[in-house]
Structure formats: structure tokens, C-alpha cells
Length: 180
Image (cartoon, rainbow, N blue to C red; front, side, top):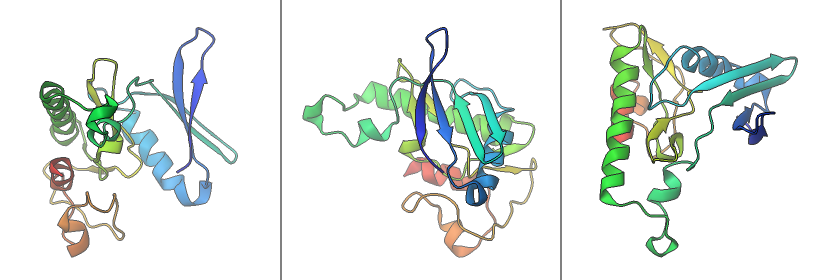
């Protein structure tokens, strides 16, 4: 996609701005993220405040989430002070599951994230998780049979077997990734 930059509004609020660098390659991902995250609202999903699509510029503006991504804490050395206690881990796991349940069961069109991993789970100041990065997300009809995708999506190591076996893709791919 590109880089994430720190923006500052006139009222001193901080916000992350995600910039798409290769417009031709990432155009589909940009519009997928805008269309999906622009119409959902849940405490465990990152909120998009706006976007820019002008000429070669593609920008996504989000709410600021103070504690960065879950991977910074899961893979931190215990002596670095960045590790999580069991109560925090449980709270994060439960909040992430609630966010996925909302995407998979409560939206008008079900949303399959397709890239659930610690790097895409952001933690706010209270360590409440927020699922982020909907660039690979797909919309699915309620109670539909799933769909086939011509190319695999997601991150190696977190991808469900359905991707490699060319099986229909359903919300189960997100649940598999969540379990990893």
C-alpha cells in the first residue's frame, strides 16, 4: 500500500493518514477499504474519518489509536516492559472476537476481512482492540455460499487452508486467522 503518516489537525488532534503509493496496483484495495470501513461502526473496528482520491493521490484518514498494533506487545521481550498480562490478553481476544462477529453477522452485507493478524489489530489507550486495514476485505451476501477469488489474499502464516485449496471463501477464513 504505502506509508502511514502522522497528521495534526488545527485543534491539536492527532490522526494517522495512510497513503497509497502505487495507484495502479492498489486502486482496488483503496476502494475496498473506503467502501467497507466507511459504512460500518463498532467499538472494535477502527473508524475512518475521511479519504482523498484526487489525481494520483489516494489517502485514508483514521481515528488515532494510541498503543499501536498488537504485534508490538505479543512479540515483545518480557524484560522490555511491552508484554501483556493475561487479563489484557483476554480483553483483547474478546474484543477482537466481538469485532469479527459484528463483521460476519451484524452488517447488512457480511464483511470478510481476509487479513486478520496481530499487525491489523490496534490497541487504544485502554488496550481495547480495534480491527484495522480493510484493504483486502470482501463483502458477502448474507447466508451466501461463499465465493471464489482468483488470487490468494492475506499474509502467509495467517491464511486459512481454503485459500491454497481453492475452496469457497467464507467468514471461516477470518476465524482461522484469528485463532493463529
